[in-house]
Length: 531
Image (cartoon, rainbow, N blue to C red):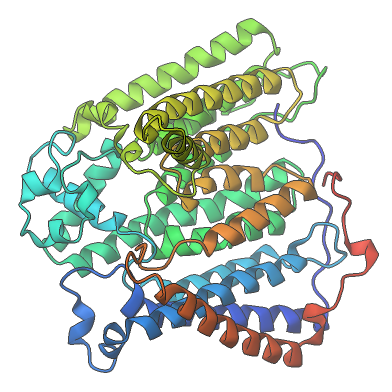
């Protein structure tokens, strides 16, 4: 099977000095989260009819947006730095490690202030509300945009970004059906709708927190390490919790399905003879595949997990081509049955398939494909050939899909031949699809980071994933705006935030000098070492 026969070594608890340092760092990150919460009141992606203006004292923040932005940036920096500092207590080679319970408490403390604030970093949640209202009113969200279906003056349409007001929903029918239930409760109350959508996202975050340590134990990774990298990650807190993105539910169902699906599969290594079918094994396989498919009915990306789950099953059997074909047929059958049931049961049909290309209308400046096309466009203008950026985007976008597909096929085959763990192949494949999409967003990379956090045991991966997560967490302003025409605001806010962060770090150093003390050589890990 795919799980490692090597269990993570038992870890001792932190000593008294380390416990104190851990608490100081946790308080540091909690203060950062509180600052984000207050800054969001004036610098978040607030609704057009902002209810904060009706709250005494707090209504001051929307009137000082630059100061609010500086406060939010300060909090963002403190949370990212706090997460990085916390990482030393989750490094698997340390003699003393933080416990999963300590990390659970930290995640709860850092997430709590973000639960009742305006959305941050993106206005996508307003699209969720508008598209869900379209479903609630009995119209087709895959044929009509919010502007046409609800009207431009509708409170729900007013919050949607202009580029999405006339586009169909690209989300799965299960998500929009759940959203329609939210719409039936919230009505036109945007603030209530945002809070309920965030509650739905929290279900997904809860599934991630539940599945990560369990998967990590199966693959020989320290549960604390997986929780720190995959659940306490600033991208999770910023974009899945504060931003209420539906990736939370899609990823949560995907990893929960994998955990359920492999729960009864025996641990095997290459060359082992397959044992007899275990009690309940087939039932858990079907349950896992069903839950993964439900994740795909939220966001289609989860479908990739079915391929690698099929490889796990084929390897658990005899590892022959015929076993791979049988497992693939089983996964395809479960996917077909559940998909048809969801599409017909929700009454939304199969229109979502034709709307999957909607996100490609955005050309993200952090996408390598988009930037390559922009460079080509500039060269075309310089050479007198004209601006062909749009054509290059279309061509390179298709090439990106082809390359990501080829990478996925390669890792499926290599995983089947026991060269990689299928979970690692899943993370790499999803990472390729996200990185090579013209509309790539920071939170999309969580599709790769979370499964890899549970299965990749090398420090090289953790270093890269940590650096990428920290940088991407700070790239997007909390308003989700580019500040066109007011670019001077961002440097001012960054500078003010940096000054406050330095002062806060001096306080941390005073309270716990060991936080910045270099780790002993024994606690550091060679770049290629596997846990």
